[in-house]
Image 1 (cartoon, helix red, strand yellow):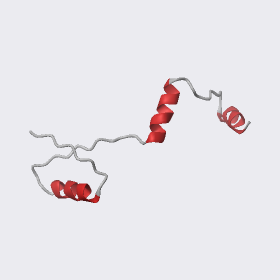
Image 2 (cartoon, one colour):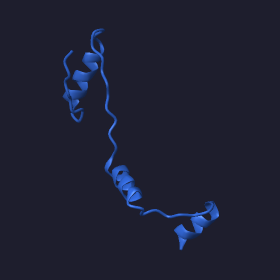
Image 3 (cartoon, rainbow, N blue to C red):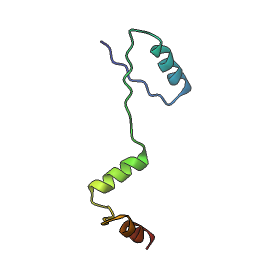
Length: 65
């Protein structure tokens, strides 16, 4: 088995990946990455920077004030 990492941020890379998909002996495992906004939100949540509310009404009140 051989592992190859391909950055899929270019047209050529995407074309190569699509070509590789056509081969029966190739197995592609795509890694899901989170965008910057999601990573920032997760970090803030771990740090406790969250809004706590008992219910949706209380949450909306806190968000709009």
